[in-house]
Image 1 (cartoon, rainbow, N blue to C red):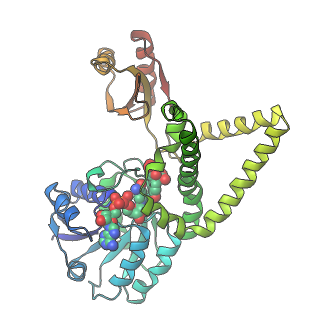
Image 2: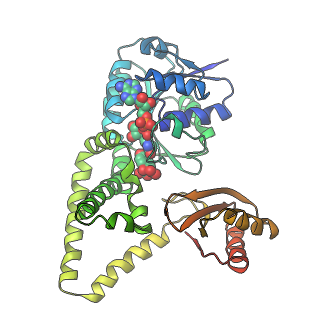
Image 3: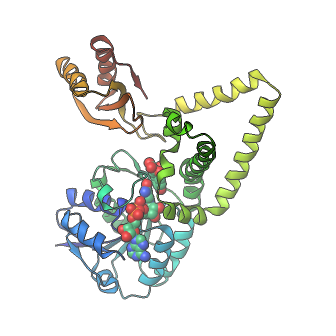
Amino acid sequence: MKKNILMIGIGLIGSSIALSIKETTKNAIIVGFSHNEKELFGAKSHQIIDKINLNLEKAAQEADVIFLCTPVSVTLKLIQELSTFSLKESVIITDVGSTKVEIMNQAQVLLDKGYTFIGGHPMAGSHKSGFLAGNKDLFENAYYILVPTGNEMNEQMTCLTDLLTGTRAKIVILDAYEHDQITGILSHMPHIIAAQLVQQADDLMVQNPISKKLAAGGFRDITRIASSDPKMWTDISKSNAVILEKEIDNWLVKLSDFKDILKSDKEVEIFNFFERSKKVRDEIPVHKEGTIPGFHDLYINVPDYPGAIAEVTAILAKVNISLINIKIMETRDDIFGILRISFKNEKDLFLAKEAVAKHTPYESVIN
Ligand SMILES: NC(=O)c1ccc[n+]([C@@H]2O[C@H](COP(=O)([O-])OP(=O)(O)OC[C@H]3O[C@@H](n4cnc5c(N)ncnc54)[C@H](O)[C@@H]3O)[C@@H](O)[C@H]2O)c1
Ligand SMILES: O=C(O)C(=O)C[C@]1(C(=O)O)C=C[C@@H](O)C=C1
């Protein structure tokens, strides 16, 4: 029997989930709804969705599963609106919002009507928006957090996790508060800090335009996410404001402590500050199940001339090492490009590093 999946919002996340479902759930019909018709027709022509339904009530009534893939403030309104419709009794409603407490509280209106709501949040994404940035592999190896209410039946939970197998993400169950605390520090604070750092740099760039050209790897690495959608981050910040206010206070105290040790020229304390961070960062598991998604990546500095990439891949082929992914990173515009090559295991990664060092003049690092 066909399974009717309604995707409300076909942006980066909605389209990536739709594409991943199409990979594994052959009986799924993906119906798209959003406030933006042009986007819907675009998504249909790219075969991300199978059908368009511009009537939300009708689309929701026909759905077996509803994914809310909209900015958090819109998701809150849509939950309210869905609760006024007469939906299938067995319907599963889920979302992908980056915060969970406010959304789970709002979902009570659906539970009151006897509907099932399971909160969701795939912990991967990008600073890009819109269906053209969608990618069926976006969530591979990432964690996909689910927040049950306790009211859902086991079969409904299984139905949702089965539907998500195409994402190749790892499902993790959390409660809403725990979720917002963790993502507050691991996802929301980094976005606030990156945004503020860019503004601080902007002041300098206005005073001294040459500084614009001098931003190097460090600035790029820490500020990529400042290019994310401001609407999405306004919603996330407002929705997680209580936790973020506490974390910002904590940040200000810690930064002020650093200022004090700097001011009093306490070299050992300054060293300890950086040493502790390095130790913690280096120990976060990268290749196993950990905070940082596991890939076996080699970063190679390659000169910007035709054939340089082919030269590297030819060497890998010669020593019989297969790669699983290759990407030119957007980290440096001039002189060098960074080539990121992913391998299927650690052994191949180290063999590749050795081969690049032996047969090419290019520097490479394992991250
Ligand atoms: N971007 C990420 O890295 C990321 C990762 C995980 C979760 N999320 C969460 O996923 C959700 C979607 O983010 P995204 O990156 O896909 O954003 P996006 O801007 O790419 O897509 C948003 C979608 O919502 C639709 N939309 C906006 N207002 C609407 C309305 N009033 N009615 C119906 N549709 C409306 C847009 O048309 C678009 O299809 C957000 O809640 C975000 O917090 C984002
Ligand atoms: O990689 C990025 O660009 C992201 O910001 C993705 C990111 C994050 O890691 O903070 C952003 C918001 C989401 O809710 C989950 C993932």
